[in-house]
Image (cartoon, rainbow, N blue to C red; front, side):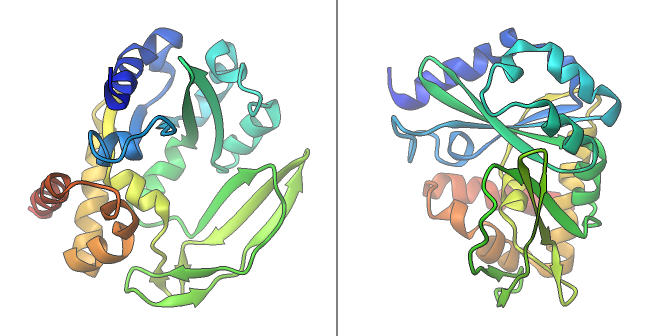
Length: 236
């Protein structure tokens, strides 16, 4: 079996490990979306983002699939309720499942371009000099604020610099994702809204060149065409 096929089999069985209904939506991102049959290798992980309402955050702990990860700790659930995104990982058949968790409130703000800050948890507190690209292609310096909370570091970034949107990887994840689960069809509605707003405000070329540039380096020409068509449909 090839590496993509192996991972597709794991994704198909993924929901056997936990109750998907505690989430509002589950998104597949990364190389298993844009690099399928093109850039997936034996080292490729499976990237999944879970969208959950704050009132259901406590239910995650009841699912052993998540808290069996060495990177899963109670403090991360506390931070998630406060709008801090976090990641942990598990392995299935020696393939890493890289899992991100985001509250519904934050997801909705992000899709409406109303999230002013990006907060993510990390086990490392170091800060490296960083130049960030905006959606207009300009490189700017960005201040990163790091605070420690129960041995977890919270990194806070600005989503806007000088009132210009920052071309964050999370945008590319949301634009280039497959919806694995959508409880009430609200995930798709919000993602369509995000694509439409980005294109209306900044133009299709800027979205392609400055948000999706890292994705386009790793995908096939067929996927590029498919992606462009999906964004053009979102404009209507």
